[in-house]
Structure formats: structure tokens, C-alpha cells
Amino acid sequence: MLRSLLSVFALSAFLISAAQPGIAARSRCPVKEPETLLSLYKNSDAIFLAQFERTEYGDVAREGEGYQYVTVRKYFTVSTTLKGKSQPGYVVEDEEYRPMTTEEPAVENENESQPATTDAAAENKTEAAVEEQAEQTDEEAEEDTSLKPGDLALIFLKKDDDDPKKLVVTDYRDAVKQLTAEQSESYSARIRDLNSIFNSKQVSDAAVLDWLIRCMQDKHTRWEGAYELRRSFQNLNSQQEREAQLKEKAKNGEKTDEDDLPDGFFARGAYAKLLGDHQKQSISNILLDSYSAPKQADESGNRQPDQGDLELIRLVGEWGDPRLAEFLLGQVQNEAVDSNTKGDLMQTIADILDDERVTGLAERFSSVSYQDDGDTVDADDIEADDDPAVEGETASPTATEAPATAQVEPDAAPANGEDAVVAGDAAKKDAPAPITYKQLRSELQAKFVRLVTEVMIKAETGEVASISR
Image (cartoon, rainbow, N blue to C red; front, side):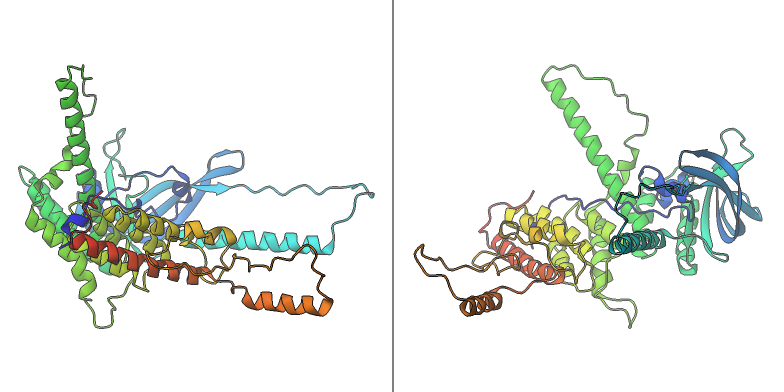
């Protein structure tokens, strides 16, 4: 059912990683692809499950105009050695970025002829400064994932290139994964599985693929398995495109450039190449079952998809399970899902259906998905041209539509004051009430659901020739 609706697609990239907590400098580095559990394991000589003890700050390591880096040491006590030689503890050494604020010098001997700042202006300036500080505080609070004494973390270490006897973090950002006790059990189990796989004389790609599926079955490690396997699909697609280009050039008698790609560049694609129909079905079931059958009695099926779920949605889209479009449409109607995620899901459905009207509504919703629920809709956000209506439906009036005004004949006598007041009151009564972004999104969502349902029904009955991308 609906198999013709599905095509390979990709959501907006959610680069999710367990960034090394508390190192503010890392958040200012260019965004890089996150390291998965599998990639960290392969590149690590030692893996410890450890308990965080304390942080010690040292001297300024370096500084520039308006900033400085301070040395920082994070002390851990090792509780379990999951790979490599055991040791009682480890100290993560790093640098922390700190902005240097400079106070503006006071202005002396101001020209008395210049007008003094009014109390109102001074008050507005103060309020603006307070609001700006509050916004910065909120942003810092959202980014604050710093370790606290007693917290658990996985530490991935490798031998130092200059001193093989010394262990350093495997990755500058993802080598320290902060975990809860429940998460640590899941990660520890998967790492022990990898020990068995990689301790074999010959590492089996099929065994690694089965391991990735086991990761997806566990909500704590779902992102690890889904992201790694989707990267495998991307790698395989790149390899196939490369081979097709070389074949086409050879066919046309064109000179082909020598491959300058490093050895093993396409090795990751082996997992996607091995994936069979039965395994694809199993992975699709993991996604659908996680919503249709909540694991706990007090857990509602109406929940916000987490990053593991979103990555799994992207992965299932690589081969197009016929149930995916219907599932995504159900999530769009799920009140527990936030508007930003709904916008992403709508865009994905639009990619699957390849319908201009659906795409227009998805883009329309996404353009206002980040606005606060209670804010009044701006004029620019409710233009009629940007609000496509479902076929046969008339767009509702918006807050920006001005009421029609009566045409006055040139020789008509002007209305007296009382008549003008009555006319003004009537105009206000007829004017549409302002709407909020929550109301606008609700209207757009309803239109989207009706339109997508219409397109899907037409596709099933053969009224649409082709709607795959």
C-alpha cells in the first residue's frame, strides 16, 4: 500500500552528538559530523565507564583580542574498563574559551549644549540591556550540559601519536559521553558486543550490521545504530554515483582522472549493501512499534520524537516502507510533537509525494514554526499568496486584510461627525480579529492533512500517474 508514494529522502540534518560537557570552546568550533559509538570504538585503544569527580582550572593558555583560553582538568574515577588496560582514574585535559568583557570608559566634560538623555530613553535602554542579558542566560542554560560530581560518563581514549604510553581523548568533542545509569547499561552492553565482534580473527560486516540493528532496538542507543547505517547508505550512494560517472566517461571516450580517494573511502557502504528485505522490515517495525505499543503503562503513545526516532525516520526513508507516509502524517497531527519537528515531518512528506501544493503548505508551516504561540501574526506572515488553500476551500480572512471601504462619489456631501463615528464603529466590527501564530499553524496543519490525504487517495486509485521524487 502506498509503495509508489515513497522515495529516497532526507530530513534536515540533525547533527546530534554527546559533546564533551562543559568545554565552551567546543561549541564555537565549526560544526563537524558527529562520531558514533562504532567509529569511536574503532578509533579507541581504551574505553572507560567513569564517575566524574571535580574540575580544576589553571592558568591562561592563550589569549587574543576579546577572548582567552584557560586550561581545565576534569578528574574521573574509573568504575568499569570496557576496552583496553585498566587504570584507577583519568584526567581529561582541555582548554575553556572565555570572552573578555571591557567596560566602556565614562565620558567626561560632555558638551552642555547637547540634549540630555531623557528618562524614557534611559529606561528603554536599561530594559533592552536586561532583555539581552536574559536571552544570553537562556541560551547558556540550554547549552549547559556540564558534568556534576557523581555523574557517569563514557571516556574514549587513544594512544598519543607523540607518546604511545600516554592516552588522550579519541575525539576533541565526542570522546566524553555523559550518561544516566540506565543509559550506561545499554552502552556498556553494546560495547561488550563489539569486543566479541572485533576480537575475532576476521571482522564480519554482517555481524556489525546485526549489531547496528540491536542498537536501534534500544531507545538509548537508537541514534547510534540509525545514524551509522544511514551514513552507510550515503556512502554506498556516493560510490555508485562515482562508478556511474566513470563508466559514462569511458563510454564517451573521455579521459578519466585517477582516483585520488584514500583507501577504504567507500568501506562504510558495506553495511547498506548487505541489508536485506527482512532486515529492512525489522527496522521499520522498530520505528512503528515504538509508537503503537508504549513500553510502560503510564507512557503515552503521543510523545515528542527524540533524536533517535528522527534518525530512524530518515533511515527508513532510504528504502521506503509503504507505512511510512501514513505514520508521518499521524505524527503531524500528534499534539505532543513540537511545531519545529512538525515542520520537518511535513517537508519529508512533501518530498515523498512530490506535489507542489503539499510542498507549498509544508514550506508555509515551516516558515512560522518557530514563532511563539501567543504572538500576534505579522502582516508578512499571512499573505494570501503564501497560504495555499486546499482545492475547493476558500482561504479564511486574515488579520492584515483591510475592510472594504465604500466608494464616495465626487459630488457627495461629507458625512457629519456623528455619521463618521458610526461608520468607524461599523468598520471596526467588520474587521477580522487578529490571530496568533498558534491559530495560524493549526489552520495550516489542518489544510496540510486534508491535502495530503487527498493526494494519497488519488495515488491509490491511480488518478496520479507518478508522485515519486
